[in-house]
Amino acid sequence: MSDTGTGLDRIHSVGGCLMRAAYGGFAFLYLLGGLIAVHHEPPQLWLILFAAVANAAALAPRRWLVRAAVAAGALSLAGTAGICAAADLHNSNPGVFAEIGGLLIVIARTVWKAARDRIVPLTVLLGAAVLAIPLRWSPVGALLFTAPLGITVAVALGVGLYLRAVDARRARSLAAARRDERLELARDLHDFVAHHVTGIVVQAQAARFAAQSGAAQSPEQLDTMFGGIEKAGTEALTSMRQMVGLLRDAQHTAAPDGEAFGGGGARAGEAATRPVGDLTRLRDLVAGFAHPPATLALAPDVGALPPEVAASVHRVVQEALTNVRKHAADAASVHVEVARVGGGSVEVSVRDDGQGRGRRLPSSGFGLAGLTERVDALGGRLHAGPRPEGGWEVVARLPARDT
Image (cartoon, rainbow, N blue to C red; front, top):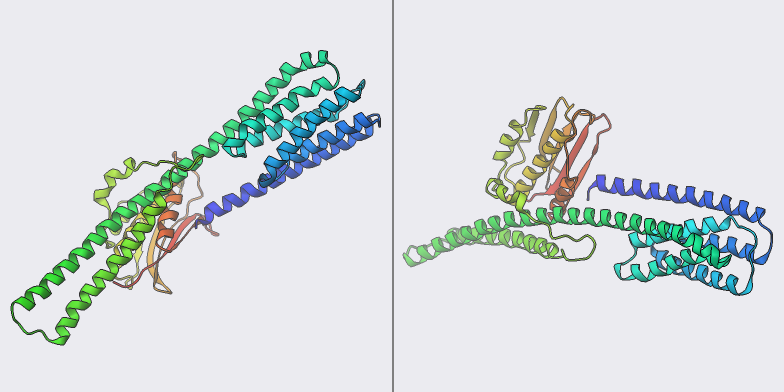
């Protein structure tokens, strides 16, 4: 899981809570002042009550949004009908403006967050409630104010649709990035499985040839042959199991509002340059990164890594160095380290000393999401974030059995 994504989610959640608290406090003070200022007649008190319900619906949590929208719209319409039939309003009421504002916020939130099949009926209900409010005073007032209120309703609809489109576009981009990473890793695993299966076939052919030649085989020799076949078969099954799991997850791309049909065309040309199970190309990758200069520390005990782990190490370093070039042009140095850690895992880290100044090139923002998908698929963990002493770091820990 990416710590960066978790941190951003927390920031957004706290920001939303602060906005709700500020709006709720303002609405409470406004309605309290309106309650003190109006004539204490039942119709005037009802208007304050309608406004309070509308603003409470505007502040409702997402899981209660639909019910709150229905309650606010229905109560406003019922109140309008009741006042038209049984009351005669002669004085203005400041609560009306708060009621209209609350209902407009509810409209925008409903269009933004509600399920697609509920948007139209809820919007009709809430829009009708807003447009009917002038009828509480007179039909002439309705003629004068319905058009301006219709414009405000249209603006609220537009705001909600825009926010919904932004969320959907981001969700599609994120789903596409994750899908591309899954499919790239699946292609790697296909190559690795083919390698293991080829080894099984070769060793089986050797054993069969030895048996047909009539040469006596000692138990130790037979054990070595069959042990090699067993090891290659086990590794092939492990890689195949991961590949099937990835492809199963990558199928879920047709969900509404954000599960995208990502395309892998941008990376299709990279297939021929993917590492094939060792860290040789990692040295070339780091050596070719000269602005700022990068150094590689490869621990001597890293040894041979499983092909899918070696490919993921290469991918993490590649993405991290790309991000340094895009977002930390003021960095003086970059340090890449690959080492064994406890529990039979390997840790790869890329750390720079930049402060984020200088050029900031355009970025899709989904590279780390793709890395997280790849690392999670292998049972590892990815951390990306600022360093206490300054700069940025990307650290991935991957389980790596000995090969």
